[in-house]
Amino acid sequence: MTVSELARVVHGHVEGGLDVRVLGAEVDSRRLREGDLFVALRGARCDGHAFVDSALETAAAALVRSDAELDPPPADRALVRTADPLAAYHELAAHERQQRGWTIAAVTGSVGKTTTKDMLAALAASQLRTGASSGNRNSTLGLPAELLSQSGEIEVFVAETGMSQPGELSLLGSILRPQVVLYTRIAPVHTEFFPDLDGIVRAKAELIQWLDPDGTLVINADDPRQNGFPQNSPARTLRYGTPDADAHIDGLEDRGLLGSRFRLVLPDGEAAIDLALAGQHQAENLLAAATAAHALGVSVDQIAEAAPALEAPEHRGRVLEIGGGITVVDDSYNASPLAVRRLLELLARAPGRKVAVIGEMYELGELAVEAHRQAGLEAAAAADLLVAVGGADAGAMAAAARDAGMAEDAVLQAEGAEQAAMILRRHLRSGDVVLVKGSRGVGLDRTVAALVGEAA
Image (tube, rainbow, N blue to C red; front, side, top):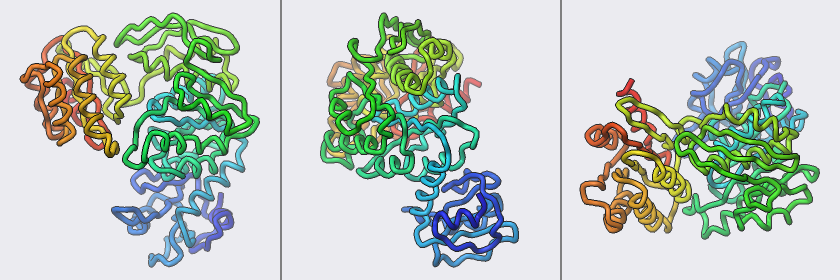
């Protein structure tokens, strides 16, 4: 739209060219593309208004506060001034959604959201013109930018929706107004911000009120916390997971790091699935995505045809051969207690010597010490060598592993990602399978990069 049209939507005032056209939006000046609208927001560490001048070298326009002291924009650029740029940004995203005839599928839950979202987008794209939010841009800051930057030619938009505090999913729901809502499993994450797991469940349920009454709610039948969700919407409900659910898996053949084979049973039939992603949890992610794809009109046979090409997103379960007969399972992007348990179970079934590199899990609040001790016990059962990465919580993990019987020299601790890489260089040998997993802030992707780069 033109800047003048944009200003009418957000009730703003234009400074500069009224006919300047904007093609997308972005809150991060480092991600700007030609024609974007730069949304200048005041954050905890910096104020986006400080970057407006440099942003306008790429961006077509900037959405700024009415009282911000800024230089006039260049001749072919514009400023749109408004009292609250964040509220205006959300209003703009809601307007864009209303103007498009897209079908929107929203994916939420506690574990596997990004992988499941990417799977669903790939399955839908086999039959429909599909767009999707990139990476894990699932917040009230990142997701509206993804929506505003989609091609107008798409038919389906698959959006990952996340939250760390109450109210965030309600806001995203009011923007998206989805026709399909898919829940992955709900587990204790972000517990620092909630009094208990029931609080997390209530916050996750906020999205349902915005589901189209003629749409479809897809829930995990193996997660009792989701049993009451259908009461919150008149939409059709599809359950997946248990043998008596609308969608389930039969005859699972776990092939370890090579993936799995199984029969996928959906309401419209069943088909054999060959999945290259490692771990039984990936089969569950595929089942969730397939159930939602069915709700979008993709048949079970079409899903079976598309499934072998599915790949794990970067740092989310990719299996890497780094040379010297060493295999790395790179799941370094993020971690929660349930996710760590699932990956350690995968490691336990792998051939060769098993090395677990586990970083601290953040935002667990009062549950942190016990969660890390439990991870240490699970690592002791699954691994031959443990490298715990971080501070006090990593120390609790290491101590629990020793208490469970791991030898003193089989439990090592690193302060950070770089030190973890140094330790691994000294201890890895041919035939090792190395699991790398931790919260994003630990930065274990740098450990993986050091190992892969060294091999290259």
